Length: 92
Image (tube, rainbow, N blue to C red):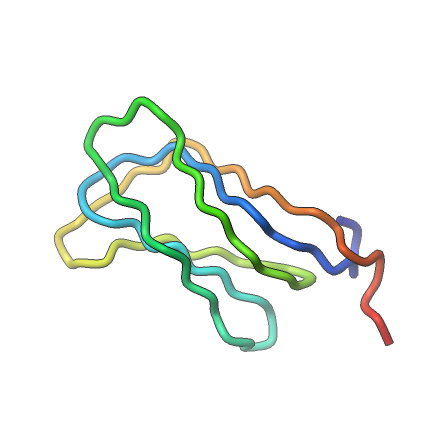
């Protein structure tokens, strides 16, 4: 995942708790369209990690986490983003 490589982001694993649903939104640079994945249902006490499969390919990725409703809340204790380099450099 060197500088300029095209990466495939394929899994987000997190330990999260709260009330409501946690939305996962991934975005690339240059104002390209965002991709939103199925929300994770949160509970106040959790004894396990939550996984969400993703399919996102870009050089660099930003991830936004937010709830679906106004009075919901969340706390993230750990996040791991799994990715694999697809190409060493941008084609062209």
